[in-house]
Length: 168
Image (cartoon, rainbow, N blue to C red; front, top):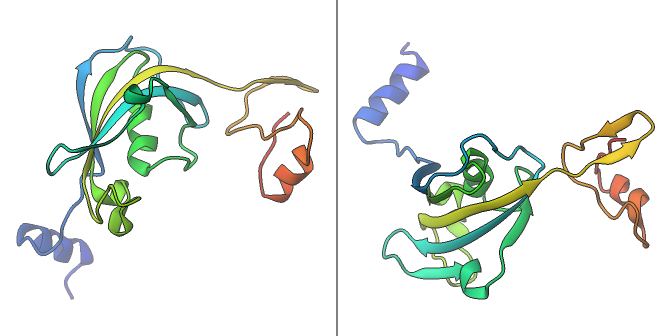
């Protein structure tokens, strides 16, 4: 019996199995080199998204004049962004080259991004921050996010019912 790793290696050498790169990064402008966002941080970026095949622009926060914010590493954006933005330091501008399996895959997106399209995003990491609460045990930093804890409406109870973890 041939070990599975040897079968996979042989298939790769013969071109029988495709290997997707996920995300690769080309730096256009260095950042500070010391401040990197972590999972759960709220990050603010400017970006321009293009199809890798022909360079056609499909979206741009710069065109709107409004940076885009999201919580890093919690699935609010495509996997390419969750993994790629973590590798950028504050102020860095880079191209994130996203293979289709780290972007929108076989479903594509909104008629602008065809199925199985590789994408390029010029991304600038403007800033990031971590939510903090003062609780019973001192200052804590949540691993993810806080959902309407202090506001009106369903608040904390509904967040917990949806499976959110709230750290104090």
